[in-house]
Amino acid sequence: MRVAVVGGTGSFGQAVAKRLVDAGVEIVIGSRDAERAREAAAALGAEGANNDDAVRSVDLVLFAVKADAAVDTARDLRQSIGSTPVLSVCSELVFGPGGVKPAPEATSIAKRIQDELDAPVVAGLHSLAASNLAEALTDEDAFVCGDDAEAKELALDLAGRLVSGRAVDCGPLASARALEGMTAVIVNVNKRYKAHAGLRITGFE
Ligand SMILES: NC(=O)c1ccc[n+]([C@@H]2O[C@H](COP(=O)([O-])OP(=O)(O)OC[C@H]3O[C@@H](n4cnc5c(N)ncnc54)[C@H](OP(=O)(O)O)[C@@H]3O)[C@@H](O)[C@H]2O)c1
Image: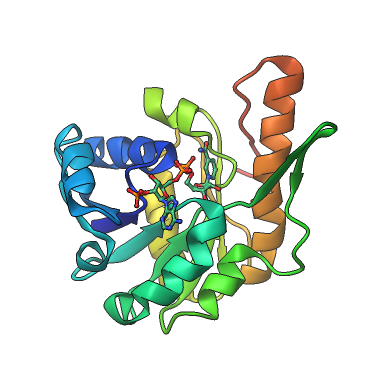
């Protein structure tokens, strides 16, 4: 499998890319700046390119840009992505004195990205923390949702290479609103309990 990580210079993109390279996945790190991408990629044994070039000729585009830039970035990359499936890991967080909250928007970022693209968009990996992923395969489940069966299978395959738990199909893209909110839950738990929390679903093998 060949995967482009858009925004792959960030902490999440780097951590995911590291695990996937170890798992034998061909990775192209994408950035707005090709040189920055190449530098970040070299440390991982991956390729680097500007985002436009990175998303061409891959099996899956992993969208790991800063959340508030995700929808605009999708719009900019529409032609280059074409019909290649996209996995959005983006979660919008609002930081305040009472803790971290999910963004108040009624629709998920994944749905808003879907509205900008001709490609099928699935969402997932929101409950995995970059700091956990950067160390080793993490002992938790990974959650993926989406409306396109083939794109979701691809994303589940990829998710299964990141965790020692299960890659769990969480249903249609409408579930992305809940999955994106999980990032806020994890950040609050980590802060409250000084932890490196992850999630596991019980009740099925
Ligand atoms: N960090 C986590 O543990 C975690 C957990 C779950 C989900 N996520 C999600 O994963 C995504 C990446 O997280 P992160 O912590 O790695 O984020 P980040 O470091 O803030 O940003 C990732 C990359 O986004 C690109 N970027 C920044 N501003 C941009 C803009 N205005 N337009 C286009 N690209 C821009 C940058 O790449 P270039 O400057 O090289 O283009 C940057 O390296 C986020 O959407 C986040 O919600 C993160």
